[in-house]
Length: 421
Image (tube, rainbow, N blue to C red; front, side, top):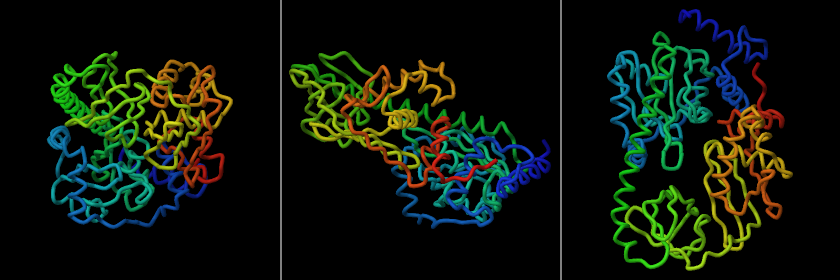
């Protein structure tokens, strides 16, 4: 479609959605969902709101601790040579939506400055509306935003394509890489290109992780050879470097806040944790005890991008960060104390009751991480476990990344976000 014609159409769609009228064509689903969040959150469609820029010192501090710093060469090599520097800008933002790095020709950088697209700026969706950085952070998926698909009208002369970058060690969202430019540069293939480069960056992080495990394995081998009994050496994320007297497992779910001394590790039982350079030595008790009884689980889904399950029992409490998929599954189970079959969960999660293999595999992982919490046939929280579900104050912000039919109904069925046609 001609750029000008597309712009007119998108502006008509946005104007109709804001007025509550039937649009000439439906907005793309990810854009409609974002607009719902903006309307519910009170973002003004015609007011260019901005938050305070980070100082140079604050920006540098974030750069130093960001794992994205390690893959900047991959992002630059994958994107910059093919960019028209006079027309495009590449930015890298952290998981909070703060722009940490930016590259492009001086002329396009000046235009970006006028838009507030500067290093240290906050491009969280709740601050500046639908955009390639903030919306990709919320949905955890690549997203391209054309012209009037931006919720705030001052952004309509731009198009952007952003892709999230995740930490392969634990699935944590690290940030977004985005390519933006004036509307004339609009091209649908840009999103696939940016997404591919983001995956290359994740692969580089995975290679570095494997190298760190090899170094830890070299430290562990002579140590384990001298130890009696059973033991495992793991990195800070629970990935196994070496074991003795145990069947090897790729990863062990470590309790949050693990420190030196006695610890309960769900997959191993009673252990004594000892720090090593780059990881932990877990020495197992001679006799593995039964899993401590769980009395209460607090499922915290109040955050926009991170969720957790905290388990309370006779051995104390421990927390587990949840992946987006596991957060969805535990929400569905918390909503139905009687439990659900794999087919019911597949229907509520994917809109397809035949996808039971995926559901069973994911719940198997959850049960390994949260020992004593879940039972099956049907899948449900254990009968004696008290479950507390903490939701966001605004129901429309419940698991904003999720496209699960049950989650969407929960967002819209409790007031909150107006429905965009």
